[in-house]
Every structure is written in C-alpha cells, then in structure tokens.
Length: 349
Ligand SMILES: *[C@@H]1O[C@H](CO)[C@@H](O)[C@H](O)[C@H]1NC(C)=O
Image (tube, rainbow, N blue to C red):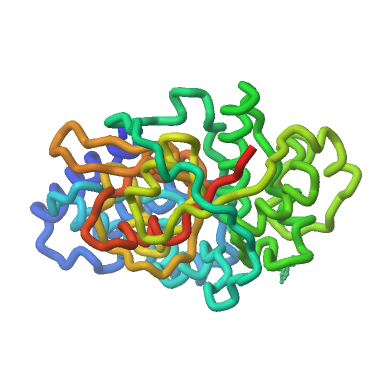
C-alpha cells in the first residue's frame, strides 16, 4: 500500500525508537514521550476516521485498545509474514468487539433447509486461466462500506448480482443492499442482524429483481420497506435463480469464479481480518463462518508464488488493499482458508 499511512507508520517507528533510545524510562508511563506520541497518533487516527467518543473515560478506554493494537501491528509486521496489518478504522476495537460487530451470517444451525439449489452448471468447465480479475472486465462496482450494520450477506449477494448482470447485459449498475435489509424480511434474513446470500438470491427472484443503489440508497440501519422506492426500475437487475458451489472444494470454486464473481462466506472475525492492510492472508482464522464477501478472481503472488483468491469486501476502501483482500488459495484444509470453500454460491441470470 502506497498510502500515506505507511509513511506515517515509518515516521512513528523512527520517532518512537529515537525516544526509546534517548529515554530509559518505561515507555508505557503516562506523559512519557512514547505515550504522548501514541496519544497524538490516536488523535490523528480519530480525525482520519471521523471517530468521536462520548466522554473522556471512553476515550481513555479506546486509547488503551488502540495502543495495544498498534503495538501488536508493529510486532506482527516485523515478523516477516506474507501479509501485514495496519491501524485501519477497526484499530480502536478489541478483537471480541470487532467479532461481535461484523457477525452478519445467521448461525448455521438455523440455516434454512428448504433453500433450493439447482445443481452446479460449471462442473465441466476446463478453461481455467492462470489468473483472473473480474475488475478488469468491468464486472465489479466500487468498494462499498456496510458500516456497523451486520448485513454483509446483502453486500455479498448484491455484488454477485451486479457481476452477473454486467456479464449478461454489458451494464455495470450499482444495486441496492438497503432494499434487501428493509424488504427481505419474510424469511431467514434479518437485516442488520444477519442473513444468507442464498436467501437474498431467492428474495430477488421472487421480487422480480432488485432496484439500484441510487434509487434505494444504503442507510446502514434496519428500515421499513419502502415499496415505492423498491418499485422504481426494479428490473435494473433480474436473476432466474442461484446455485451452490459444491461444498469444501476449492477446485469447484475456481471453476465457478472463472465464470462469474461468486459469493463466499468466511471466518472473518480474526485479528488478521480486522487489521488487514495488504499481502496474502495465510492463516490466523478458523472455519466459523461469520462474514460474507465476494470472490472476484484469483492469481499467484509474483514474489513468492503463493496462490491466492481475490476478495471484494464491504468495509470501505481504507481497509486492506483499497477494500480488497488476497487470501491464500489451495490450502491443505478442504474447507479452504477461513472456510472460503464451505458456503459459496452465485446467482443465475
Ligand atoms: C432488524 O430487522 C430484523 C428483521 O428484518 C430483526 O430480526 C432484527 O432484530 C432487527 N435488528 C435491529 C437491530 O433492530
């Protein structure tokens, strides 16, 4: 990342080092130069991310978390990993808080058994290029930001529909997540409390399509379904159904991704996800699916040959590689890294 953030990190490391060398006092002591530097840094971070706190006590608590995260980031980044971390918008949250906030997939034991998947049409795909990026084919809208509403399921499903719509019609149109949050409430999906991509696809089929982002803009909170807004250019994007990628097969996922961007669920609650700043994520996560993203391609890292999936997230452009992530591909576990091969699906159009 050629962001000024990295320059800032380098500057502060040097400054911190200078102070530590010049001053043998413990660095964590209040009013120590290191502590003051960290407070200044927290202040700048607050400005950058538009963060405010209700009172001094909360600010002090948040500062302590920020400091712990920054120290963790610096230690981690010195460790020679294939990915690196940064003080992004989640840097004042503990990992537990982050986990609770992003959780946007309904717990899998409540998964609708009745959801209909119609087979896997890409089973016989053999033309698999060495790398692919649906962004270069104009099938990916700019990165969006779900904020603190746990509706990653809607962002993932909408992004997949945006992709197949571009592929079928030649038109890339940003579509409405809020319509799903507000109107897809009869079944399993629960707005900001979580949902499933397959149920979103099912809703879009029954609904006769989805309206545009411009017609029904994102609010970041549960709202009441606005039928008038939803009815405007509903046919902006229509789908006929959806299919699930065979479970626990990165090979099957690869075939599907060669044909269209694919919705995937991941264990996104790890500190690696929380503070990801770039590189190829290679671990630190389990298979507890709690987040949904979009697989938009794959490739091999030129530096060391690590194979990766290219992921579009919905946490804004300040997170990761301008809102995107690369995650290691073809790992030993059949579930894929962070469970990426466990619950993949795509809409048909
Ligand atoms: C959001 O709406 C869903 C129903 O769509 C409901 O189950 C959930 O509790 C609501 N969440 C909040 C925070 O109001």
